[in-house]
Length: 187
Image (cartoon, rainbow, N blue to C red; front, side):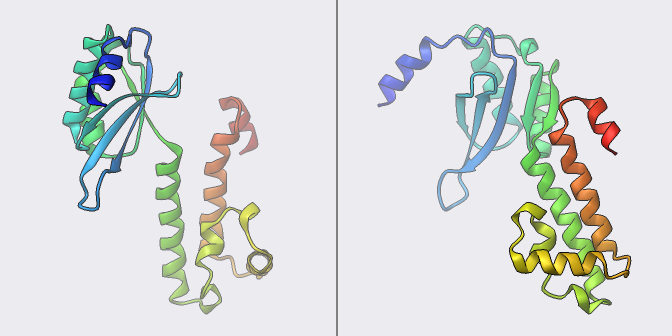
């Protein structure tokens, strides 16, 4: 299998690769990580290496050059907010712009909403057992969640948690906008 894989990789041509995505995955139970580099335009994995540090980006850059590519041709890199990936991209793909992926950004936003909810629940028992109401999008609410959300919305309590949830929804509108002016108009 290794021989076949290497033969196929030898014929790869990365001269047209401009936008890549990078993320890590745990290879085994012991937190052995592998970083995957994907051509975002072709939706194809083009490089895999052990680890999840800035050195993985250096290895990718070397492999890119070995397959007719240039570090300067990479214009966008989609990744999580890992300081190691940011450093690797900055050091080894200097012409690229870093774009944080939606999944990881929404994770940070949800954590912020939950932090506000936890703090407010200490003094306001109405928020007890409401965690998933605020972590889910409205379209994914169960009938019970919808009812509880409605009662919290019209309670007149001016909850910080509701304001945080509305900020989350406004942030998500960025991804639904066709162009920047549409997003600004909707705010």
